[in-house]
Image (cartoon, rainbow, N blue to C red; front, side, top):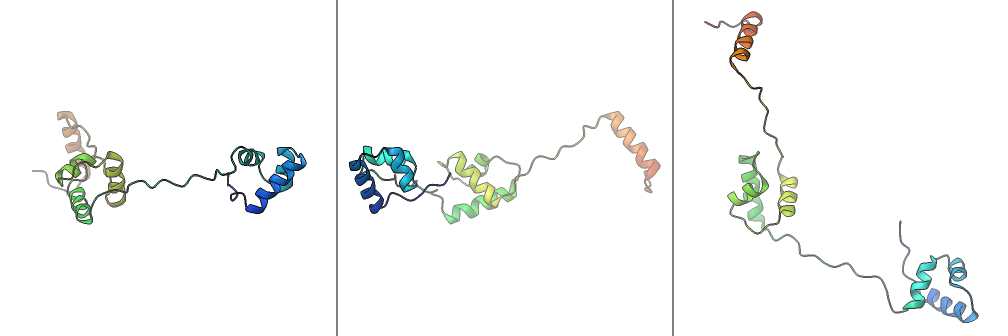
Length: 138
């Protein structure tokens, strides 16, 4: 669910005034059209606000390395992310970052499945080809 903005100065002063008058937190919440837990939190600690977002370190991979990875991924489309990065001599990159980079720039391909061909399969296919294709098999 969405969140409203922090309590404004006027709302804080109203809460203090209503508390002095002896109103309950539920009644104050109804009067201010706020959640009662917000009012309770303000009463417990009036100085506390919202936590700021913590900045995480972004991926440390240069543009030159990205071009290397793109070239390697194009030449070996069936390789794992680790194999692609190792072929470019790039180490110390976590798996999640490797996969995110490859998801953005490279096509993921699965190995093409081929039917197992034994002697009888080959003979049956040749018979079919002789019967239905206009090719000389001599």
